[in-house]
Length: 292
Image (cartoon, rainbow, N blue to C red; front, side):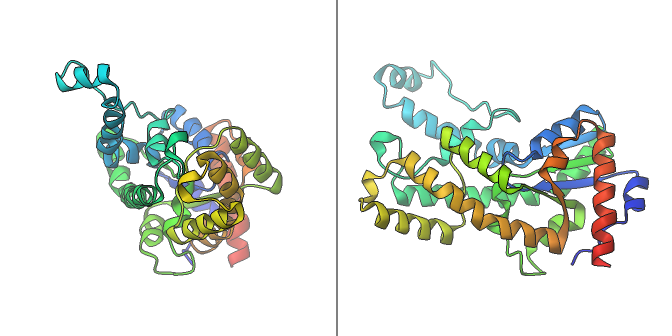
């Protein structure tokens, strides 16, 4: 297991580097915004990095491909009369989700499963690369902007690309060497609310390849339907609760080996940098004594 700083070390540190992980919707970005607003923390959004550095061209090309299907827009594009680009922002990651897409009937906005799998693999590589950029941005934030403190705001799919039972997992070894890794753990009530929220507005997700294949085959069997007839929204709604159950033990194992755990309800109460620093100190004190 990774050696954790003591609560005293954390409180006395001149520079603090943390990485927040857990399901989307449990407070990672909320806390990151609070810290950024203090003026003392650099906020590194992994999803923003993915959308601007690693998938930006693919996202723009996808939009251009759709525009070329419209004669009016095709003519303007071909004559360089209009420009199509992405507008990825911390508060607008929709272009990344739209590119990732959903599998199923093209007439309902779905992608053929082979294309969907290809995009999933491209996203996997992009997310790993963005996560591996963390140390670079810690130094960049310090050297260029003078930030002593750093928060890495990760996507919910980080747990899909690591082996939480391998003490030498390369991604976790790299990240834990530079940051204090904090799992924001949701309760059963949080999970139920996430499922309700997702059901109202289903959004594309990234899945571990083995999990996706098993879910896809089970869904086709249960529905008795051909792949090209799948309702994309119905599939990802059906898959979501299963994805949460799949990820929960992976997050827990990551926290037990490499970091600490803080309840989402406690994170929701963070309204200032001081709140966050004190909350982490309490978690370090409690979990440090448990490990000791």
